[in-house]
Length: 111
Length: 113
Image (cartoon, rainbow over all chains, first blue to last red; front, side, top):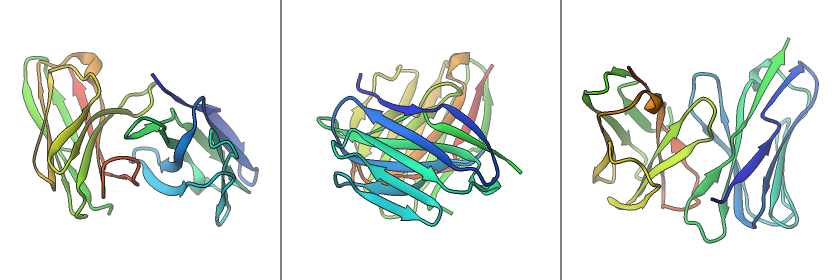
């Protein structure tokens, strides 16, 4: 079936380093959402991007939606230990009625 | 915290048991979802209910039986499960079915022995 691919699966950084996770689809996405799941927790909505080329910022987090609406990225500047968790992208693939989630990128931040 | 509650939070059951998971949302949403989250797989959408009607069933085995008596409550009835069904079962809701922002409950961690 249709998939939303996410890379990397896992990343371990030192506190203060930057981090980026990428989300790719072979087909056009109507929108892209990003969620964060803390260890032992549940996914929590972060943001939604709808427009081609859209860029949104939340403090140290920058979200981008590609021009072709087939890819997206989440960049964290100067990571902190509170950023630890798994970041999921979820997109609505054209022709499908619900969101398709990526496998997620697990981020570990060492102090 | 998110307006979506799930009970129980943890469940251990044998393969011959029958149990039910409960989800309740206090957000006034019209759509509710069941997801399965296993260790090495992405979030797997199981069922979608919109205005109490099932609108999506993603080839889920019949040993999982959903029930949505009203727009605020969603159940997942379990019977004769397999060990590979052990996972975190997450309930979510959204204003409308589709690509709306989803609000997740804390999940039920299920272990099937």
